[in-house]
Length: 111
Image (cartoon, rainbow, N blue to C red):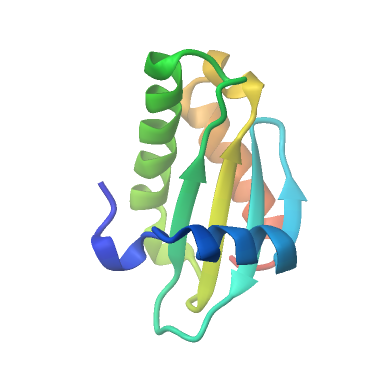
């Protein structure tokens, strides 16, 4: 579980990032990135019902939280990130999703 200060909780924060953020796509995820005024980065994870039933969606979100937790020290500070899970994530393994996430973040130039 991510610490509370690293989470995006408010609907208006999600809406603002979706509307004004930079979008970078990968095979398993889409990341929306926007700078913030804080001393740390914040993250939000979204899985729609297209991904699968509740069990599959929760597994996908747990997978992304674990990836964020293990790579937290790599990120540049002052970013808000919303990670949207794609349908293909339900068949993916941890290493595949982690590699995809790191490549997306590199392409966004925030690593």
